[in-house]
Image (cartoon, rainbow, N blue to C red; front, side, top):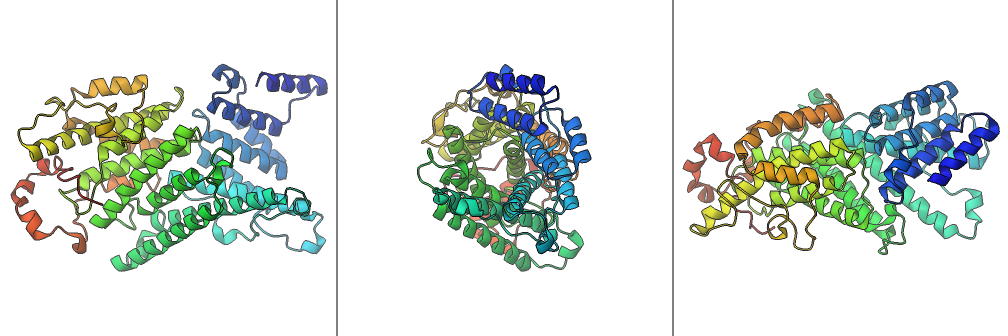
Length: 502
């Protein structure tokens, strides 16, 4: 990185003009990647300060393909910059510029175009790269995409003539397969976002519960098909394969898509107990797969990862508040999943304040869920004395109680150490009371006040009963019916039977 800094200075001095913005952005992204891999010291990477506003102004004045490349690099860099501009705003500017230049459509008269076949292909690749970024940012923020599907009239990425005759054609064909797979994933996420979270509420009022189920099942089938196709082209040797061509990356994005599909929204507000179980199991699998990427050193410390965990925190609070006693077939352990999410957030660099704020949310969830698990086990085993104190003392360092047995115990960050110690004297009722307000504020501040994921918070206190086909068996619930009369007791009965087989 020091050599890069020296080269940039030499270029500036030799030509008596500023370094190319594109070159500067490439150096900044490279510095961020090296910092993520702990290959350079943070103070060295900090030398490359990205002036967002001046770069945006420059690109708007240029209004050419080169400016699109720079905007794409700028939006990509913003994902890894905790103090940068909102990536959704940047992808919005990027999308408008793409539409303005017509990069989203085939040439009106190809025979009169001055572009070569290779230039046309490179423009298409630039568009699809921007398309992928637009979709992943929009689906993570719960906000509309910048480029609508109906406006796109462009073939998927292909192989150029030069690549086709190259000796390493196999590499180019493999890269092409992966690129098309990622495009398919982002396109699917965009359609899920639009249909499930951003659809017109008035238009959906005429849909019955079975109609909604059919739509969700169809989208689920498409996700499963994408995953099956991805497994066919993925490598088992993760050390030698590109990240997007590995099973761990495939798993994380598969479960992330399922979470997006099942996340509470206006469309699927009448969530059944079975759907609640599926949603929580999906979150559990996502957390485990994300930990695998973390341990391999491949998990991205960016706003997408933090945003997904923030939404997961809201979903878990939703499940805590909507849960009513035992769900048949449910083996979900909230404390275990919360612990895994905290581990991921603890791995973020210290300058990621947003990750720390989300971590605080998860620590409160950890307090509530662990206290309820202690109460449940005490009720089950009667006089058996637990190691936890009456105030609900707990430890995230205990793999037996909070982490899967095949995962190593984490080393807590200073923030997590303070939170663990401070929360031991706080009641679960206090945590529950503050969680809803804090989550609502953080989602609105981070993802935007119009984010579709604000709906999760709006539905937390919705006590509408679940679908009839998933109600409790009367014989199982009659014994406890009197116990559930108290609203306060309902919130203390989250883990009545966590040992149920899946």
